[in-house]
Image: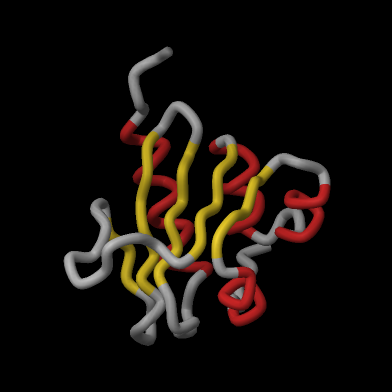
Length: 108
C-alpha cells in the first residue's frame, strides 16, 4: 500500500468546500482510496469540512468510498454522482435519505 498523498486529500477538501454549499442535516464520511479520509458536516450551512470525525457524533450518517478521480469528478460535477455509483466507481453506504438531501454545486 502506498503512503497517503495529503495534496490529493487537500484538493478534494477544497472541491468539497465548493460543492457542498447547503446544509443536509447529517455527517458524510469520504474515504479516498490510498489518500485518506475526511468528513463533511452538513448540519450547518454552509457545511464544514473536517480532517477528523466531529466530536459530537459517534459515526458518520453516510459514507462515500472511491478513488481520488471518481470522487473529484463527483464533486466537480463532471460526472453525476448517480452514474459513478451505478458504475461502481463510488460505493455509498449508510443513510440513503441523507443522499436524497444532498445538493452538490457544479463547478463545470
